[in-house]
Figure 1 (cartoon, rainbow, N blue to C red):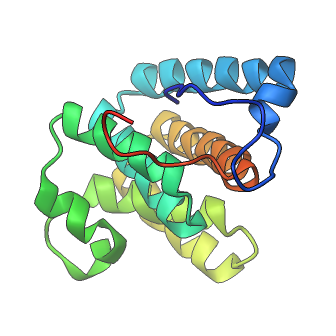
Figure 2 (tube, helix red, strand yellow):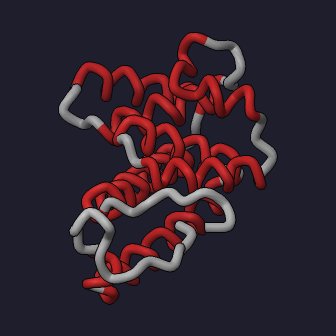
Length: 163
């Protein structure tokens, strides 16, 4: 996740937990770096990883991570059309079977209590992804879920460019 200069406390009176507990946050960053390498080793391209990051961040309502990963997806070559329809990916033909499997698996990882959706997503993933890719997608979703919680609970701001 990209770093933005933040003071120790937000304008909303929340503690920036990443700044307050830097060792714990640094461990999360290191985990993210290991997961990024795992995803690359499994054959997941940066675009697919960013789609997973974005979809999970949409589900969690994390404005800060949506901002960071939208920019990352655009840098990786994603189109504005696909970004604009990502929330409704099931209702479009813009995403490949592999991407659809990864997105379903990421959603199931984000909402693990829905056992039916989890089984369906896993079955779909088995048809389109290797075991290494399945594992990598799950790790990407777990990691962005953790970053979402850090940013949501800290109320990290989304600032306009140049601010």
